[in-house]
Image (cartoon, rainbow over all chains, first blue to last red; front, top):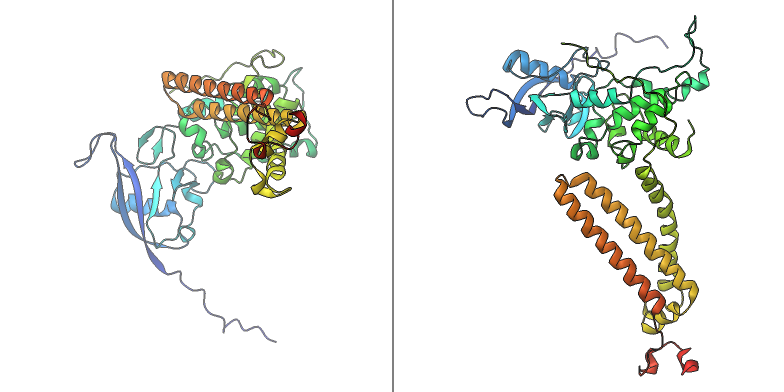
Length: 255
Length: 148
């Protein structure tokens, strides 16, 4: 049978669709209708393709309709972790969420991350989140003389913390945690993931310093295994599993 | 803007000093499965064996509580269930009560309720009289005839 390239349908143009975005906005200076710092919903209707991402839709709004819309984004390809936001009541990266996966027939609801103070529109103050991360000392703490060459590690040892090295600090997990929403003292899933990455690293010697921090009142024992963090992680890290491994390390001393 | 100050690495101080939250977690993990076995056994014995639900009357309960095995079985179930529930509620209060005043109030109410139920329950379990004098013999367990 001969190839029938000419008879196959040409690559079809993706039809444009009309999408409505309902965005929770907060302008610190206030607008004519809304007071300073007041949160309100605003709807935008745009023409987009089903294969566009929510970030493309936000760009379209900002560039063509309302330049005052504020949101963070840097790489726009799911690596930098700047554009985590609450889309249809789930924390996701706007740059990794396709419109066709969100039922564009209904308005798409876009909110800032919950549990962190809103600065403007979709931008939240990430400082409490980073403060928790700094608490667990996210750097290698070796003992002994500095080796002349790299510190070697077997693939099996590396595998133990491979999952938690994927974290991009987007805060999707921490701000999806119901305990974090009600108790800002809780370190949050991300800080525990960050600690897990070093606790289970055979080259690191600071395990007990970190475990002591996480054994605190605001540490791992606040985790109620709601699994929201695992569901929210845009990198597919098994966050709840990592937290449980830290709990196990604390109870059995094995890591 | 200056870079935020990172914490200085501490000198290893051995193990953690305050392990209260850890033991609370371990207790929940241990008491949970034990309670599951105790409660399922309790329900099975009361509802599935013999005449099922229609067998439960004063005589049935009195007969059970006259036996030391069921006394200690029920005592274990009572204490574990109350402490398990107490600890769960304590965590909920810690999570959701924001003001120190309301937290303290709720904690003391919870502690009082737990204590009252455990003390009352224990008292009933170990001082229960299965054959009260002057009661209708038809309602009493069969072994009361031997006592009388």
